[in-house]
Image 1 (cartoon, rainbow, N blue to C red):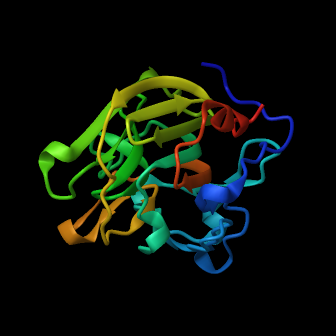
Image 2 (image 1 turned 90 degrees about the vertical axis):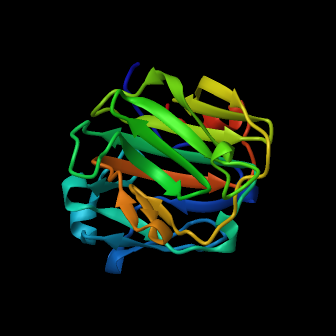
Length: 234
């Protein structure tokens, strides 16, 4: 898989269904500002704006720099816009591949515990999943890994979509596997975490990202293949 090379800004997708968008271009005061209509601002944890700001994909502004060993992530408070059924999760990612004491078997891109998530496994494959139909039943936990792996130290665009019938993962705008899934995505009171899994009800804080993240987005519908492709830097 080739590295992303951007010659200009990423083409925007109409934000009619966007419920969260972190661009990481201004994190003054430790606040990560949400550019979506929801205004779900997050907070830097265990890092400062200066340390967390790094160059992103050329032509795409700044990115978020996280050090897994220091347990750094972005904490996002629970909000009604995050309780989504059909959805799309997207992010530009660049990871080091270096495990830390809480890596376990993955580095988390984003997760709303007990609802939906997207992460990179130790073998570089992307795992997407969630709880569908019931928040309590173990049988409602559905997930799968991408067919392709994400290279380390390389900017890559990831996306996960759920349309009520199929859960799909996309790497650099190309489909990389899918799973038949039905049922409403679970809604709960857990917060969202970017760069970690944070499940206060279970006392879990783990799977810290090590590397960079940028243009993290959540939509409350499944975007089309063309819409996802339009977000990939050219």
